[in-house]
Image 1: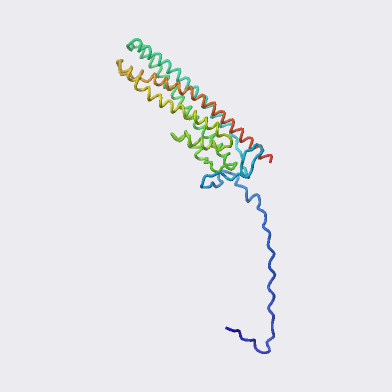
Image 2: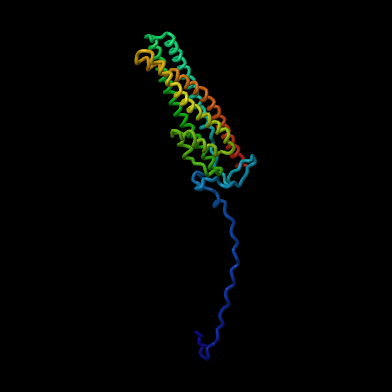
Amino acid sequence: MTSLPPPAGTPHVPMPPPPPAAAPVAALPPRAEDEAPPANSLFVPRPRSGAPVAPDRTLQSGIVVSRHVGPIRTTGAFGAAMVACYTATSAGAVLLMGNYSKGLDLWREVRARGEVVADDLTRATAIDDRTFLLTCVVGALLLLSAVATACWARRVAQNAVAIGRTDTDVRWATISWFIPVVWFFVGFVQIRKTPRSGRWVWWWQVTFVAPFAAVWFVSKISQANARFDVANYGGVKARTLFADYERFFQMSVVMAICLPISTLLAMRSVLLVRSIYATIAGETASA
């Protein structure tokens, strides 16, 4: 469709020129407060893949951390409490071994004599009473050890998240020490997120699992022989008191050997982790 010409006598009004193109605006540099993670580094979103954050900063010590390192929390108090509980538990295991040794000596006397007398039952009852008391004490110490380990592992996992290891799960690092079977694996995996701690924590895990596995194995291979020996002696009470002395003594020997070794490796891991995060905190503060 063609446009009609303007009527005669209409003045020609020229169209205004188009406005000049605006000059491109340079992008403003990002502000530090826009890039920095929130103060509580536990709430930094974690990638679904579970992969750690891409490293973009290497400290003087050679440790690779995130560009923005959150607050590093001290682990010394919880670590000291954990090692103290482990040491007390190891001492309780040694006392249990000594008590079962007395029971084993009594059982050997009964077998050599060929009969059970009243004095044997009195001595066996006293040994069993001490065993019950020591077992309760060791059980309480094991519970305290789990609580102390959970508190220490939580603090370690928080520090791992703070330096950029967002594949660390603080919740599992805390609760895994109270779940049967899980306490052998998951908590140690979270602790090993700490840079340069893998070897010592791995050996600590091995010595942590070994006594429980060895105790189960010893109990299975010695249970039948112990009950067969006692079956030759009369009296239900005698069979109840003497049946498990030999088996329990063998189990207590395993615990008395393995728990102190595990305690030493746990102490070494605690000191190593404390040193690593102290180094990171010092180098990031001076940067």
